Image (cartoon, rainbow, N blue to C red; front, side, top):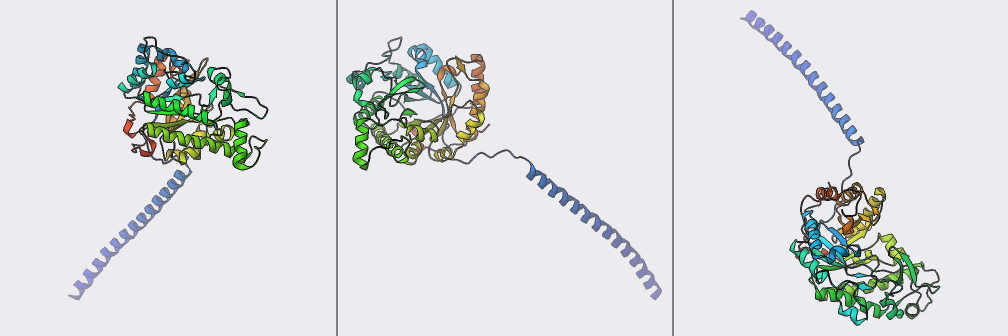
Length: 432
């Protein structure tokens, strides 16, 4: 019995020893494997950290995407012909555009039948279309039928040709430089500037804006970089007397003196705030759209403090004109802090140049700009209609196909949801 017990114990011990050896070996294999695995994971993490990851689009409140185009005086031939206009609007609708900004104030004239202009002894530049129609009313009807918004654009703002019925009838409305000169050079050529601080100028302009809202079923009104004043101007008798009355000082001889700049910019802001209230009183659903230059230029060179307008809640939509041929500069401008701040509050877009007469813009550059703008959550509006595809380097069918690829799906801007301060957030824009 004892021998059997000893024999069994030895056999059992030998089996136990073998199992222990196997377990010990397996333990080392597992430990080695885990160590190697951790090393690989750690190495992978380092490699991932070293990789140049794609940038992440900034977070912003999402509004209905602006897909607009400006109809300028260069497009008058299209607007005057009912059939051509219908074809144009049908094409825009098929390519998923959603907004038309149509010029109504240019070169000191209105482009619709205007009792306000007639009372001021200013005759309409173009009274009727080729078929005898009111061009603005015709465009509104056709566009609304296809679901596009129509926003009349007061392109010239406070600018006027030096020789026009407006400047000849009301020379006291003009402002000037210190040396008495009253004109400057612009993209429209030589222009004079109406005094934005003069109450009669303010009343005339307000009357024009409210007239459009009263007479036409429009979706809003738009003002651009000419709703401003070059920084060298403001030395007319009326303005200098007003400055002395309010500050007990003479206007600085340096037109860029910060206090002098601020005083004039604030006066324009006051006018815009009053105009905003008047627009809302006339038609509460009307969108108050502004299309200025980038802020540094707008404020420092043209006394246009549009960032303050946004902060005061007197802008429903902002489209910043960034007509840069260099893509890097374009991206820098659309990613500035004031743009990021604005797009948290209201629908925000960027103006993209699609061409000028004798200066076509390649479609490839337009595509890059649109994609960059949408990546940063911005809408777009193109300047101007005929340069989209009719006056371009590439064939029209190729350009239209390119726009179709940019906007493969509709982005409807409903009238009840178009106002920035009351907009219903939508799905984020597709950055691709």
